[in-house]
Each structure stands twice: as C-alpha cells, then as structure tokens.
Length: 327
Image 1: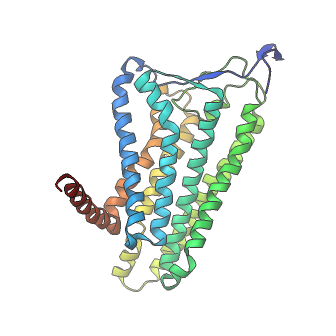
Image 2: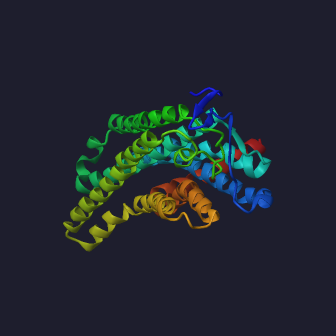
Image 3: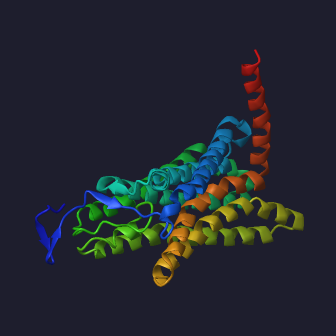
C-alpha cells in the first residue's frame, strides 16, 4: 500500500479513504422516487428466494438433488443482492454516495464471488438434468447428498480462491486522487479504471477469471444440453421426448436470464463507449437484479412440484396464524 508521500509519474500516489459512487446519471434529483422500484425489487428478490429456500427445507417431497441445486441457486442470488443492497439503497434512499476503500473492496469481492458461484451452480444444474435424462435409474445413486455437498463446497472455494488475488492486487495500486466510480456498487471492471499504476496484472487475471468460470461454465452448459438433446432424440415416443425436455425448461430460462444480461453488459463495456451513461447503468443493474428477481418466479410457475408445495404450505401457514389469533 502506498503512503500519502509516494510519487508516481509526477502525481501524489495514495490510497483513497473513500470512493464516490454514482446513482443514475442525469436523474440525481429524482433519486428518492427511483428508490421505490429498487426497494420493490429487493423485496421481490428476498421474498421470492426466501420462499424457495423455505419450502425446499420443510417439504420432504422436495428433498431431491434437483431441488438441492435450486436451493444453492436461491442462496447465491440472495448473496449477490445482499452485497449490493447497502450502497444501492444508501444512494437512492439516504443520498449517501461514499463508501470506504476497504468496504468497496469487500463489496467487490463478495459480489463477484457470489456471481461466480451462480455460474457454477447453473453448470451443476445442467449436469443434474443430463444425469436425470440419460440415466434416470441411477440418478439418486450418482447425485447423492455427499456428492451434492462436495460440488457446493468446490464451487464456493473456487470463487473465493479466484477472487483473492484480484482483491490484493487492487489494494496495492496507487490511485493518485482518482476515486469516482460509475455505478452504485463496486465492480472490478470499474475499479481498475481508476489507479494510475500498472493495471495489466489485474486485467490479465480478471480475463483469466472470466474465461475459467463464466466462459468455461457456459461452454460446458452448451455441451450438456447437446448431450441432453441427443439423448432425448433417442426416446421413441414424442410424448416421452416432450416430457424429458419439459423438465429442462426452468433451467434453460435461468441460464438465459443469467447469461444474456452478462454478455450484453460485456459487449456494452467493450464497444459501447459512445452510448449514453444511462444505458450502461440500466444494463449493469439488469445484470445484477434481473436473475435473482426473475428466477424464483420462473421456477414457481414452471416447476409443478415447487408450485404445489407453495400451494400446500400457504393454507397451513394461514391456519397456524388463525390459531394464534383465535385461541
């Protein structure tokens, strides 16, 4: 870490005490009104994913590998949203647009770690669908609880190990007074634009992290669905083919909801320098908020077992509440 008296290329190099976050460009006066949809989004995210986790925990019929992976997905989506919520609501509700240097790096670390985990969980869910269709009789013997827990631990460790070097490389760079970010949370791609030192190691490592996680995961998901399609086409009856493919619909939606905003944002950062900052802000928010908000709704609507469990649970909860109110 550089001291306040170090010199770098003729500038005073130091670690800033705080970073300045941005809300929505051009709409600063309307932030209090903009906070309303953000609050609603967070309520939907925490309520939707919380309900998914709760019913999977309490319903014995959902204690199966598929729903264990769905619980992992709901958990990491809660983690992504919890990472961004303090600064997003701080800006739009309270007008607090500063975050400490350490707080910014911690937010970057936690948010990117959870997004890497989400990509890994989506890959394991595609493997789950392949095993269920390719070898249904051995499904529960292949995807046992220890195997599922092991996959979850590997995904979590991988994301943390990959993010630690980026964290420490940023911590040691000189900033020379540059501390204004372009989003309402701390992204690595945003932070590496600020230092006046050599950020090539950060860029190279960041590219490695992206290709070894999102790039490799998306490729393996495509391969798994090619194998699934090949297996399904080998099923004799059309009804059997449709039934097999129908079990993949929710996961395909989750993959598209996750990767389409991510790819769009990457292309925007790469080729959209001339586009309005408002569009970049909207795309960055869509990348982080759209998947955790939409996935619980998709799984509740498209997965019969989840939908039935919610329907069974709600009357029981109403009955318990009525018994407490009326002794």
